Image (cartoon, rainbow, N blue to C red; front, side):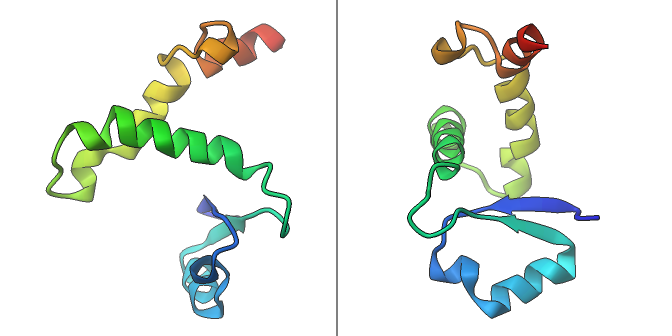
Length: 98
């Protein structure tokens, strides 16, 4: 069972054999689109753009731990209201669909 999932584009650094070996060693599975089919990359690009503009660019961080991406992911999924989701958080929006 994978310890994590890394979603990336098909850039050379992400498709190299050496990078794949490092991910396998850590138990990390990869996720990337087929060439010319980047439809699944859009949501991730949007998420990282939101994280950078709402959290990263607002403060200087001395360590990666200070950024606390897990805290931002929790905020993004449970408290951050999104206009495209009828002004609900992703968690609230998914609950309505159930």
